[in-house]
Image 1 (cartoon, rainbow, N blue to C red):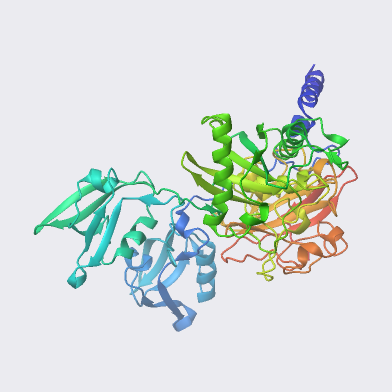
Image 2: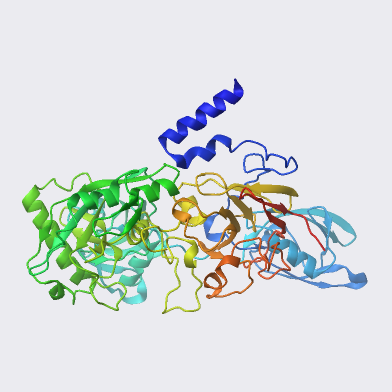
Length: 614
């Protein structure tokens, strides 16, 4: 009966969509490999939660030590206000143990602190004038970098020249119904502080708001007619510019569907191809299971729709839905809008299209949509400028009714634009960044052909996103591994699974880690240049590929493509001593040893974690 239920479940999933088939067997032991653990049976851990502003930093004690008589470690100086000072450490103390372990050299102390996190409780054993003392220090951070809020806060004040002596700034205007007006502030008040931030210039108000979020309640101190007054203001959200702009801080989409309004655009003298109907666009963008191995309206082979692509990558957790509207003809020729490469210039065309659509189809025509897709007639407009109006891109445009996220792409002329281009640009709608190397920053390494957000494979069959992208969107749940815990692991293909991935911590706080995914030539990944284990290093919020062939730098993902995945003739291990190396970039790390990497005949990959081979 147990076997029967398992088979029935697999069949039901297959009927609903092949992408979830592997979930039925995720918890099964590895056949014939009882010593290997799967993602379901691996020994897992969790990253330590710490204050985000100190993530990636080592612990800081605030002492200077030198060897004294007999080689003992003597405290020479203590930084004022540091963790050491607050713990009661004194100059002349002899430091003998840290958390119960002997410490005899400055290097040992430094290594311990590098591996510790800000906020860690450190037990210090010291000798002071022949007495043994036990002290506890709460480690600080080397620095506390400021963080800009993702959403700009708004208060509604316009400030003038600062008052003499720098004590406050004159209010010259208050926007009606703004948070400042509702709080009771008036023109000619002198604002002295916002929260604990002293206001000495008009620019200081901008700085004070940078760390605040819409909805925060802040205290303001002001002077009026010689009296010092206190106000409370609940901050609003800064109104978006009326420009159309490419957003570098797009928020990640966290819903299971994105509804897209598609607006084909025609120009005087340049119409959309009669060979491509609205039904053709609807199929290419939103259909499920009807575009495989058929030709599109202009004769190119298709491997699935944009919706098929995203459903496959997300294991059915996400889909694109939407409507293709009848074409809208604008008032000027296509080239007449081309000078609009500034944000304001782009908005001219986009707002004209929106206005004409609403005038024709009703003011509520766009009511239930999350974003817009503009498909303009003809082939890609000849422009060398990335970010110009007709360069395929994601941006934002403010129309009187709403601020819209949008994508603009060409129709394609004689060749209908394929899923490859739309698949990449739609990733930006979900909040993902470009991961390709740019010509203007040749020293920056991209993800090459190993991610659809980098150099996507053309011909209508784009490759999958990296495991990093999938995890950020909530489509992938990696098993988190402590590399110091010895275990033998096995990893199945990531295609068709929401769990086949390991996250190996480099630092306890998760500010640096490796993502391991097993990529196979199947589905939309069929065009990959190689198969096997990809190792992505994640630092400072971006993935960098650790290529098995050992060629580092920007060219790494683009050379010896079949030898990028592990194992290869260049490497069957990834350790601090291999090339590439697993050594931490942020310092204070776990030693990461991924060894004995092997590929099984069925496509799965096995490897050892925590085993050091000499």
